[in-house]
Image 1 (cartoon, rainbow, N blue to C red):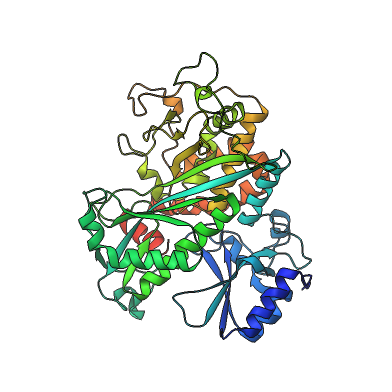
Image 2 (cartoon, rainbow, N blue to C red; image 1 turned 135 degrees about the horizontal axis):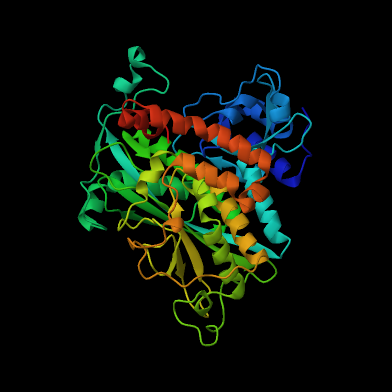
Length: 488
């Protein structure tokens, strides 16, 4: 196991840990499905691991959403399919010193985000954070960076039998296990109701305090339309910070709320009859690295342009980037909505997209352009995502699609005025299931070139068993309770 160089950040963290009263340090890594996994070390062991890293069984990178290994790791040929993997060998979790936090809900516990390496110190190409870093490197070669704002809908329920329930009965154990029994924190169907917010204030305060204690730029907490549905909005940051925050936010609020007798889920459509789907609306813009200026903003509308033309609002770079997002929308869909459950959200007149169209400040369109000439906050909002998405893959897919549009100088069609038109072009419909979305991913050149053919095959191998279980389930709702509701 190669030791990491003793950088100033690493030395400073070591001094901080030595002087602290922390007892445990969690070394966490984001898996392909956006879920945090890792190991918890005592402080003494953690000090050694800062330079040496932490051993992690490689099969953790090969799990599907049911936690079953999707590759035959004890049969010959795996090394050819997945170079560097074989026989459940070890990878090394390398801590990121700048990620260190003290967890506000756990006693004397610190937290470090990590990235996996092979034993020789080389990058594991299937690591999703590395994939976003690679996409951002493509942007930086053009003198550009990405800025993202997070708008996350999710559900919070009260546990009926906190802290224990039937799902923790050892006689009921299964793979995946039972979902917890829950009740609502607000009855829903009263959007932005102050009264419903007051009813749900206790769990929302836990969300607030947890996010702020971890240094996240939380801007607002809101009551959404569905029963027990809420929304958290974060100020814009650079893309990598936004993705890191998304991963930690989901895990942190689930843990903090569980201790207080609540259950938070980021699955798109909880398995109950009367629910509203949750989306993750990703606000994005590009910035010039040398000046910080918004590269999507234009000083004045393009000459003779109408409000339905992208050039009326977006710069030339922004127009081509928007065109790339549209052109590769089907290919990137599975990176934005990666679960079989999430495709039930794409319904007409539901403030969720149904077709590959864009609009100016139009919440029915897949892509919503916000801002105007001279507005430094001009941006594109992608409404395709679900809150369970892996943020590194979601954001990387935007970059690969957008840059493809810029490189090919694609033209943007006129903005839609009827995003749910029944007589619209059927070829523009978003994929309606995970299987079709995976096929579109494999057929999309911007995605295969951006992520790499090996990654696309790897990711498809993780997701196809999920779709197969979904299709074969005798009780689809029970499948989703176990696969998603209790785990995502």
